[in-house]
Image 1 (cartoon, rainbow, N blue to C red):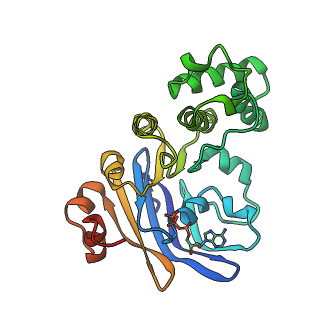
Image 2 (image 1 turned 135 degrees about the vertical axis):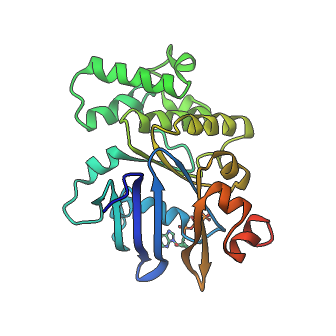
Length: 258
Ligand SMILES: Nc1ncnc2c1ncn2[C@@H]1O[C@H](COP(=O)(O)OP(=O)(O)OP(=O)(O)O)[C@@H](O)[C@H]1O
């Protein structure tokens, strides 16, 4: 039986690019409403695994997935799944702010329309609430018609978070969301992510171990052997940081490896 505390679960997940095995045998569990930090050295497959959870690899015909991923107990890798509906439930925020080449307001109303919210007034209302949620409303309310590209990097990343949140996702996948931001903008985004705890299940890839310590309820440590990424260890952040089970994790967290 599915554990109701588990929102998202990968079992024996493997990914190949053009036939080359990139990630193998990953079993990962994300608890509902908690923040799971995914850490590990470069190239061990963190982003590759993260992108599996909203089927982003469907866009890459050279990419092949094996194994199982269940969202609320339902298999999401099965053929015929409504991928648009999945992406409404599981949003992804990339490393670099990727606002749409539209106005600030339409960055939010466009996805709502795409996902079938019919009335303009409802879309505008949802957009305002999403902008308030990420603390951008006061900064942009008088220039909603201006291009999103006029915003700073930090503001654009908050706009991207608002664009994901406006669809009221159950899960947010964050791929190093602060790595392109200065420390102040990074702190704002980090606080925002922390404020979502309890409401949204969050998986965040980060190279910043201090950030993982501050944010995470749970931690998954990835590693790579002979060029193939795998999950070395996972557990509660307290346990993994204080008393890791694996020597590799211990050395990585101590800064000696990776
Ligand atoms: N689109 C792609 N096509 C081919 N190989 C890829 C592609 N994306 C990733 N890879 C390969 O898959 C492996 C894992 O890469 P991935 O980016 O997932 O690692 P990562 O742990 O997220 O790294 P980083 O921390 O540097 O972002 C690497 O060997 C990489 O070269």
